[in-house]
Image (cartoon, rainbow, N blue to C red; front, side):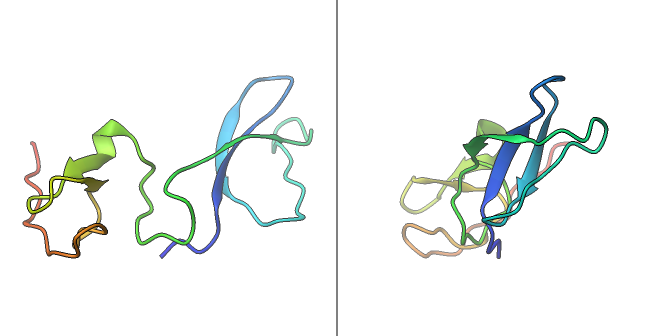
Length: 91
C-alpha cells in the first residue's frame, strides 16, 4: 500500500521530470544540475491507496461486476469489493 503521496517534479532549467513519493517539508533537488525541483502536480490515486499504478488509460480496466474503472494491479474492486478475474496478458 502506498502511504506517501506521489508527485511529479520538474527541473526548471532542463524541463526534466521525475516522479517521487515526497514527504512534506523536504526539498528535492535534480541529481544532475543540483537545482531545486518544483512540484508540477499530484499523481492519482491519492495516498493512501492499494494501487501503485498511476491513473492512465493503459493501467485501468472495468470491473466485471459494477463496470466502474479500477487499476489493473488490484484484485478486488474498490467500488463494489468483488474479486476480479485474472487480467489476460498480451504477448
